[in-house]
Length: 414
Image: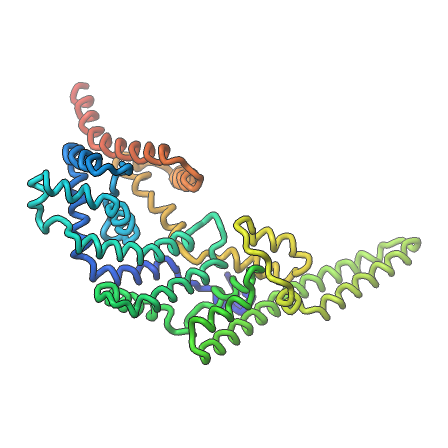
C-alpha cells in the first residue's frame, strides 16, 4: 500500500499474529515435562514399524487381544506436537497388544529405555485428553475453505478457560505442564493492550453473537477493570471503523452525485418533471440514511439462530442493502485469515516438486504443480485415495536414486 493514510484506521490493526504458531509454542512448552513418557511409546511404535516381521508379530498380538481396530500406528515427528498427539491417540488403543508383544518378543522386551509401563500409558492418556482441545482449535483456525476470523475468539476463550481450569489440577505432572503453557500463553496474549481488536470485531460482525457475546465472554474471563477497558476499546474501534468506511462511501457518493448533475444538463425538457421528482427521492433516501445509524440498528436486531448450515458470508451478502457500510467492513474483516499455516503448508511441498533429478521446471510450471496439488488435496478425498498418493510418493522417492546409474550405463555402452 502506497499511502497508509488511505487505509481504514491508518493500518493500526493491519498486523495479526499467526494464532496457530502461538498455540504451537504454548503446547511445545508443556511437552517438555512429558518427554520420558512419550519417548518410551515412540520407541515402541518405531520398533513395531521397523520391519515387516515385527508388524506381523504385532498384528498377531492385536488379533489375540480381539481388537477390531487394525489401523497402522503413525510415527510422529518430534518437532510437530500435532503428530505426537495423533501417534499417542492411536497407540493408546493398542496398549494390550504392546504388553503382549513384550511377553513374546525378547528383543522388544530388552529394548533400550524399556517398554512402556502402566504409568507411561496413564500419563499419555491424560495428556491426550488435555491436548485434544488444542488440536481441535488448531484445525479450526488453520482452515482455508471457511471463515476463521469470526470463530477464533470462541477458540481463544476455550483455550483460556482450559488453562485456567487445569492449572489447579492435583496431578503434579499435568499441573506443572499447564503452568508452563499458561506462562507462554500470557507472554503473547497476557497483555490486553497488545491483543489485536480485529479478533473481537470479527465476532461483533457475526449476527449470531454480535457485541453481546463479546461482553459476556469478557465478564467470565477477566476482572471487572479489564472488562470495562476491553468493552470500551472494542466499541470505540468498531465505531471508528464505521465512521472511516462511511466517509469513504460518502466521498464515492458525492462523486457520483456530481457526475449525475452534469448528465442532467442533457435531459430533454419533456422529462424535467420526472427527473426533478427523482432527485427529490434521492435526497430523501440520503437524509433517511444519515439519520439512521446502521450500528444501532444492527445491534437492536435479534440474534440469528445458531445452525450448522448458517453461512455468514451469504448473510452479509443478502443484508448488504440494509447495512451497506457494515457490509463493507464485514467484507474486509471476515476475509482476514488468523493463521498462515494453510498458505505455508501449500508451498512446503516445493521440495517434492523440485529435486536433484527434476530441477529444470520453469517457475510457472512449478507454481501450477504446487497450486494444483493444493486444490486437489483440499477436496474431500477418500482414505483409499490418500493412501495411494502416499504410496506413490514413497515409490517415486525409491526410484529416484536408481535413475542416475542407469543413465551412466547407457552412456558407457554408447
